[in-house]
Image (cartoon, rainbow, N blue to C red; front, side, top):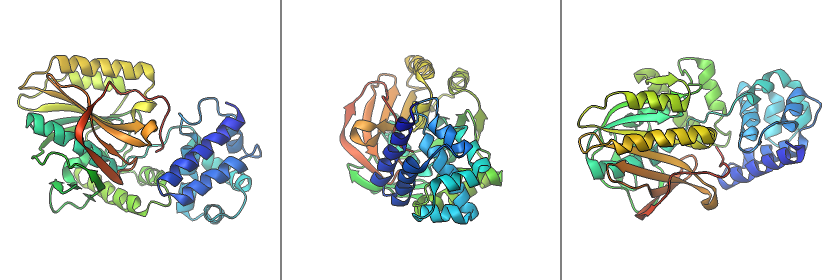
Length: 353
C-alpha cells in the first residue's frame, strides 16, 4: 500500500475519533499521519503496510500499542498524547514494544455494545417469547456473553438484575424497544484469538484498545472484567465459520430460541467466510420451527449513516429488519418507530472501533 494511503488512513481514523468525542486520540492519529517515518522498524512496517490500512485497522493497532505504553507510565508517550514530542523519536525508542501490536487486529470487546444486542433480542422476545440460547461470533474476551448479568435502561425499558454491578444506560433516541421479559438460558462464544481475562497481561492489552479519552468505557471494562472472573464464560478458539457450523450441528433444546449474535465483527471475516456463515444461518432458519425458532441479531456499521445498525431476523417466517441504530461504542441507541426492511448485511469498507 502506498505510504500516502497509509497516512490518509490515520487521518480518516482521526475524523472517526473526533466524531466520537475522542479529541486526544484524534490528535494522536493526526500526529502519526504526519510524523511516522522510516527511522524505526515500526515506522517502516506502517508505511510499507501490504494490505488495506483502513480495513486492517492499522491506525488502531498502533494507537493501542501507544496507549499501552501510556498506561505503563512511559513519559515520552504521555508527552506525545499531550501534543508534545516527536512521533519518530517515540516509535524508535519503543520499537521492540510497538512492533508486535501491528501483528494482529485490535480486539475492542466493548460491553456497551450489548445494549444494541439486547435491543435486538427484545424484538425477538416480543415475537417468540422463549428463553434464548445465544451463540456469539467474535466474542473476544466474552464480555457480551454476560449480558444476562448486566442491568440495561433502554429508553425506560429495564432489563436484567436490579443489583447488577455493570449498568448500561445509553442515551436513548427514538422509540423504545418492546418492554417484554428476556430470559437467557445459555451463552457461548467463539473467537479466532479469544482473550483469557484471568491473565492480567491479556486484560491490560484489552484495556489498551479503549481510547485514552474514554474514562467511562474504561471503568465499565474494569467492572465487566471482574464479572467475567467471577462468573466465567464459555469461550472457544477457532475459525468463525467452522465454529458456527459445529454449534448449529448441536441439538437445540425444545422451547428455546437459538440466536447467533455479533457486533463489529463482520468486516473482519472476509467475503468467503461471510458467505459460508450466511448460508449456515439461512439453512438453520429454514429448519426452524415454532418449538425451536432461530434468530440472527447484529450490530454492524453503516458507513453511509455514520452509525451502526441493529439488524434482526427471526425464523420461521421472519425477514431481516433494521430495528435500531447505535453509536459505535454504545453511547447512544436510536430505536426506529417502524422496523425497516433490510437485505443480508454487506459492508463496503469499514467503520471505526
